[in-house]
Length: 57
Length: 484
Image (cartoon, rainbow over all chains, first blue to last red; front, side, top):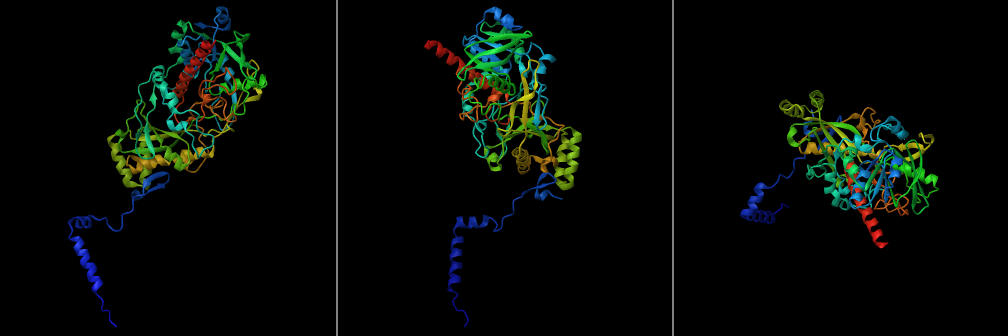
């Protein structure tokens, strides 16, 4: 039997649209941090040097 | 008044209330405080007005354990004592240095820094110091601290004229207190050798050895041995918990901007850790001396950095192009853990010209100290990298836990402990007022009372403690006179 119940998905979309229509929430969405943060530039010790990982040759 | 020897002093009829033994920073400071309160004091100085080989010979001794300076080179036996070769570095021990470190046994003082702070203005006058600036935190872990390079007061020179004119101070040269005599509750006299002969026993109401961080232990050990424990009845800790400030170049640094830290007039800057960083790393306090490096050293360091981090090497070399003095040697001095197995003992075989046993110093650096050196450099290196102040390279011998080099400064010539301050009779010799436990009229002055050494040079703290002891004795003597 094919699924027929699409009402809940439409309801969620409606709620989201409603929320985005609120100015503050829209602002938040525009500036939200990316879901995956860039890893911090961790410090490493190489041959006695204390360096940032990004500096390594 | 100044007398060339004990015979002249005896002939003068001067009757001291207090006998101070030694004319270094502690002895002279305590004498001046007491004289200012109208109390007559005698300072017995074993040496003469100037250096002589003959006097210096009494300071010969032997060190067992790690390599250390010759004991007749690391101190001076004439008017002014060790102030005569003091370099002049000044800083008062920090508040954290008085607190116990829970991760290191037997650390902490029974007094706090606030107990000596009322005397710091006076200390500035005594040592000709300008005011200290506040520490500057450059990260949560590291602060940029100030050590002042003072004019290095020679106590025998600066205060000679004042002592000559004083009616309350009798400075007696060439007067060696060979031992104290005591009955287990009080000292009853000081045996004196002067002008080449035994001069008998000098007496006063109070006695204060101020002969330095090695000799105080020797005098009291010998006195106690000769009086069957009558001078230091609670002697379990006598001579023990001896400490130095080991110092080694443990790394180098490259900075792109040399103006980030204002250097002092000898091109040095100093850095120390936070208490939290010490606790987290389970290490002692330390001071990193950042010494600007000549150009050839900087070039070598940049070339080495280019092998592992070429762009960073380019970044610093651009800075170096603008100013050739932005590389530095990192010399680290650190606080040594107080340990009973670092101690001053009387030699069983070696004696001085009067037959008194010479010192046998037992001294070793511990694994905790290597960790302090390594982790301290790492803390400093991380701060410099995180804040982009520069980059640090730690020396291979530090990383690989190889033996300490024997061609460096080794230590600070700072002799501390041996008669340490404390409340526990089994782990200390003097109480919080520097009075020997259980002895009514015997006090000890100088760095031998340090319970923990902190990381900074000791002279400023010695002078502050001496002002405090001078005040304490003056109050006690005055109260005693009023009660009679």
